[in-house]
Length: 207
Image 1 (cartoon, rainbow, N blue to C red):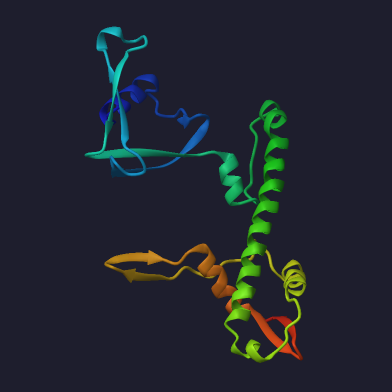
Image 2: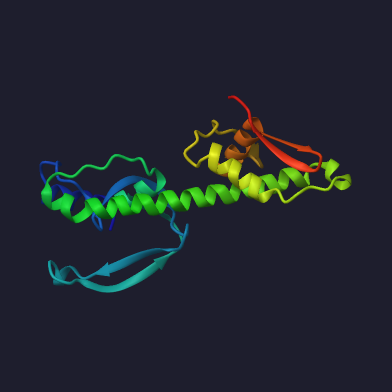
């Protein structure tokens, strides 16, 4: 469907322009233009105007050339998975009864998953820090994993504020550092790791 036809139909069905638009009940987040081949070729349906307003599909075409507009939706579930503290409201008893417990369960699942993922990232980070320590070649180090795990549980969380992103130019493109890169920079500043008599010691530095 072309932009002009979409606008025409929207204006026809809602002349006020005040009705919420959704995709599978999820709100529209943003729109962007992309090459037609991007992330899979554009799929265009062929329509028979003589069959409208009933089922009028008479063919289809995959297009790799040209441009497409991608309407990106975002469900409340997906938004909560990105921010487990996201406030969610209900406009009445029906919506609350149907979705309140589901949203709270989603929060619990996502918090547990996010924390587990963050902790595993920290454990890999610690392993790398030890690997970069040349003193280890001549020292006997106890198993650091229990200590690192205990330190994380006591002092760190995926909810800790991230450091601001940093960007650099690569091959003519501006590239921002990843979430993991930003988190590791934070740990570089805040987490002190020493080895005393072969025992790893973790220290939380003040911000």
